[in-house]
Length: 120
Ligand code: 5GP
Image (tube, rainbow, N blue to C red; front, side, top):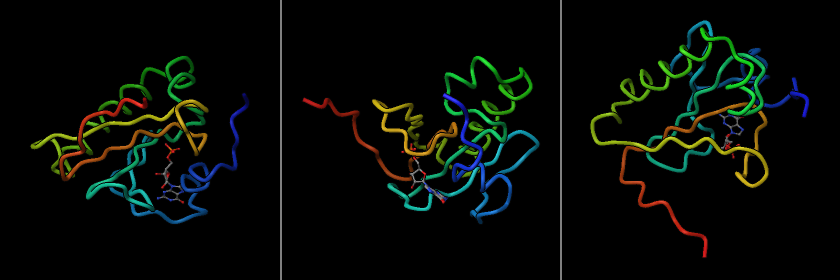
């Protein structure tokens, strides 16, 4: 599937829509989720046009991949969630219930997030 250049996160990267920035470098932007599901809920996205982790893993440069993984760790430290723990979520595709078609990792924490749930 072709990357949608007008998805909401692409527009945030271009500065067309405001966000509450937590961290930014040449390759990565992290900002607060507009509808936080936990006490701390931050989204970390690459600035490049990658729809999901599969596309990112296959197509991103090594510099982008290194920057992205390092940024996730840096943001967790900056938020202070590294001390008590946190959850990373990367919803992917239809079955993964991904709503925005631009790779994003959710960092959720600031409280116990509970076990992963079995659907049935
Ligand atoms: P997904 O379901 O795709 O994994 O998560 C998308 C996330 O993006 C949701 O948690 C939603 O609250 C967040 N979101 C959607 N639109 C915006 C927006 O315009 N600004 C911010 N900061 N977050 C958004």
